[in-house]
Image 1: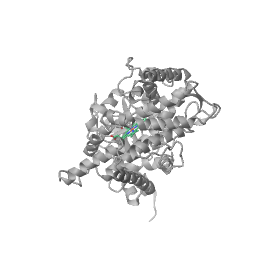
Image 2: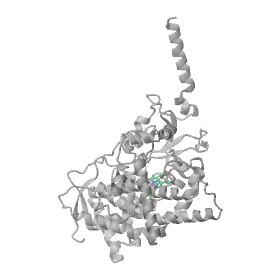
Image 3: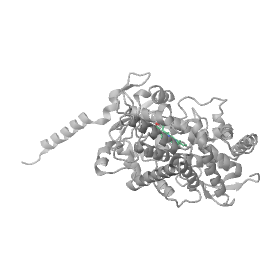
Image 4: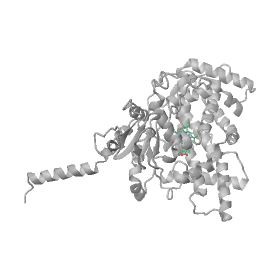
Length: 506
Ligand code: HEM
């Protein structure tokens, strides 16, 4: 029997009806939410996410300029884009109990480095966050201050080899500084990567952050293909890298134990957390199989996540700060005067208190984070059906929410002349920053746990660098800045290249 026009029509109608019945792209319309339906079914809006993070966040922010929120689709899954600062505040802070988690999935049992804060969800996350929060108290940060100064001094010294006419790629050097700090504070290793970039720790650590479309797509597809990845034994972190970090921690722990070494660093604090839970398990007050037990796996994983979450973000911000100061010499002068005045009061010592007093430096770091926020967007997952405040719309559990931070940070409504570097916006006396508009570290209970540490680290290094050197643009400086589309973070496409001049007063 031949395949005639009637059969063909039947097939077409059946496909059409199936498409209509299961078409995921009607989700937002049904809820009465304005949406962007993808041009190519299935691929959804994912192509937008393959652009540079600022381009994605800007587009996400500028679509539907008069709406507080709207819907898109990631492949076939509905995603809510939220733009209104009041709603952002509700989602991240007030209504947190409806949006506990981020959209990542992870295989905690089989990955040696995955039992950490970023991966944890729900109550397990809360228990772990409560355990780790004291690690970042002012007292603990103060204890790590000497290590930060040592790493910054090494950076200052290293720059001494360059001439005024040299174009120096400072992003890589900021990366070495940031890695020195993490190696020292989280892994207990004094590597002086600034002078030893061939160190394995730097090579392996850096390679995990090399921007790549493959990794980006792999990560974007993770929520959809988690079980396939698991079956194929595929993970974001190669086995060799896992082994490397686990060994690094184990060797330091063994050395400390043997030589009775105690240092006021993250590794020590994580070791103390483990000891506490070991004792509870011994006393049978804690079940060793309870997922919240802080065991060896947790210790290594959290040392690792401090590296994974802290290395590139901090290095990038420090390099953009130097970049903006080089392009804005008047601001660099104000900052230099601020640093000099405070140091005079503190007898020239870069103490913890002196760094805290450098108020213009604090403002300059905030302005850098506003302009070049390493995380251009923040995400959450609806964990309990959520009625959007001021509407009848109920977003069901499972939907992803995206806050396009970069777009908000560059909206002239909240930050007039957004492309200009103006640290004065953050003058605490002016109190000019509207709620829900400045989110470089996220907000609410899931805000970056190390925000104060990161600011402190950047300020300490910047104070030492700027007291000694004046930064200038050179012929290789990229103006305006261009970002790498292969990365999730706002990384400079061609590095950050500047020249520098030793100050006569240094
Ligand atoms: C300038 C530097 C940094 C920036 C801009 C930054 C930014 C962020 C952002 C945007 C988030 C997500 C917050 C949210 O979802 O609301 C985050 C989370 C996190 N960050 Fe940072 N970060 C920085 C440095 C660091 C450092 C140095 C560390 C570790 C020493 C760190 C550890 C973490 C961790 C563990 C989380 C997950 C928190 C949780 O899920 O409870 N970050 N960070």
